[in-house]
Image (cartoon, rainbow, N blue to C red; front, side, top):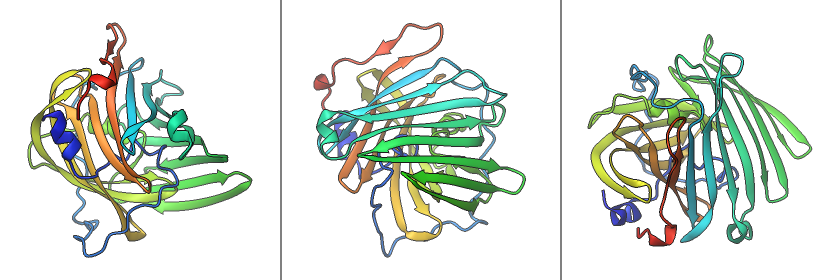
Length: 288
């Protein structure tokens, strides 16, 4: 896939990569669109491939672009095992330019079952402009429940959701997707917590493409679909994400849309334990 093809792609998103940046976004309202898959139609996630393509010590760095300009940075880290769980941390922070439009500095951490990559807990702590937000989310596999306790400055609240076969969160989703046995035409459907809501995420593997990025040339799977709020099906967003078709299964790029316009995440550096850091060329040399 060429750089120009990525630039021309439809406004799209990957729920995990830009969730922190989009916390208070006014999601697009859609009418006359195709129906959301029912529980019967939303089949369980297929058996994951092993061994895992990542482990503690992996650091993925991204540039975030919005409104046609660089907006900030995002880092995804695989942390050491903690109390038998595998923490995945995502940190996003806007730069000086974009902070004049919306200032964000936040971290979300997903605590995954290291055997299944399903979340046990998700915690988010972020400042957006002058508003402090937290979310503490517990996943109960036994009864398929998601229990949320959140704060917005001095205000606090709770909520509870129920998912069908698979319940994920915005930070851990990408790491589970890295282990899917991709093939063209394969469909995926699951429920995911994000922004104090539960979303049904569904789509399919469109193609295996060539993608050119600052960190190198890759063969990658393009996954396209949609995420829809289960309680408000007119609130939905398109999904496009590229994952490398190699042993590392790197999340290479994603596009999204917030109330201000398109947002793009581009992988710029990879650090893996025991390997030399792979860093991108300067972004001004990249032509989308």
